[in-house]
Amino acid sequence: MVFGAPPPVGSDLPLGTGISIIVPTYQEVDNIPHLLKRLEVFRAQYDAPVEVLFMDDDSQDGSVEAVAAAGHDWARIITRTENRGLSQAVIEGFTQAKYPVLACMDCDLSHPPEALPQMVLGLRAGQQMVIGSRYVPGGSTDDDWGIGRWLNSLVATLLARPLTKVRDPMSGFFVLRKSDFEAADWLSPVGYKIALELIVKCGLENVGEVPIHFTDRVHGESKLTFKEQLKYIQHLRRLYLYKFSNMMYLAQFLVVGMSGVVVNLSVLSVLSVMGLPDWICLAGGIAVSIVTNFLLNRRFTFSYARDGAILRQFVSFVGACAFGMVVNYVVALTVRNNLGDDGTFTLQLAALAGIAAGMAFNFLGSRY
Ligand code: GDD
Figure (cartoon, rainbow, N blue to C red):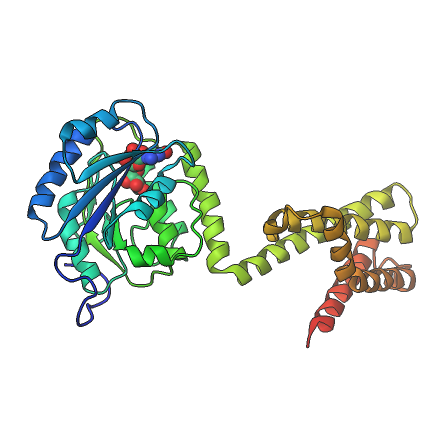
């Protein structure tokens, strides 16, 4: 059974449509012969042409010889020396693939090639991607997954939930149409999660999942280091920004704005403790917070502009904030001078009143 939307009538992938299986590899010499044997059986039973591309990051461990020794004209290995990495290898493999159906799978026999026909069935039924999934009914992993690994996978999957409802978006075993892959305007994966990248960047809504048993590797070692896992956070941030760009920019802008309030109050408090007059304290708080707001927005919110001329950007940022800044200062100083004597409005409260007035002014001024 294929999980996902019901199949539409007719298919753009008739029987006989070839499949290109892309296998990213790094130091998998011990696994290559085993995987090729399994793929040989799969190929003999499959109803269409099959090609297998090992996308190897220059392992220099005999992988090239292992593929050659198998002597299959349908399997070849491509040695990559630039732009290394699992996801990059998959993208290059998909680009070089010659058939309309693309598959991606690990070399370490974690993913059963026997599930491929059922996965392709999902594509033929109209789904845009079909994932070999551990987390749909019938899917499983080996028993010796400790609580740590299980929790790790759960958290990673939950973090991706706002991006896709797929139950196993972490899977490296999936099929999709080459035409959908080619429709992606800009792929920039960081780390391992190429399926998630494609779901978001290719705008894949109709993603099916076929249950698989995920087997732990017997030969060689996993390359999923802690560093790779940290890259996942970076990858998620990019994908969130891509999918929810306007909301994310606004959220980051607001967080930076809040940090500016903290900076403003801290600076003016320090200046006040130093015994400086109120008008200097308020001006100092505003000036320093404008600078930190600018730097943080440039670094995070509008990080795409990081390479621009900083001075010019700063001048236009100050220009955009200028009126709000003046309103902020005048209101804060007026409140402080007129209502501060009896202690009702401390310097900090006066500054907050100024900030609120500045924000209200900016908001009203920005309305059409
Ligand atoms: N070309 C290339 N370059 N291939 C790589 C690289 C690299 O830098 N790093 C890893 N690979 C290959 C491995 O040789 C293997 O075939 C496949 O990518 C998966 O790497 P593993 O290191 O075996 O990953 P894993 O078993 O820890 O992770 C598995 O589980 C994840 C979900 O929990 C894989 O199935 C992942 O695809 C999956 O995301």
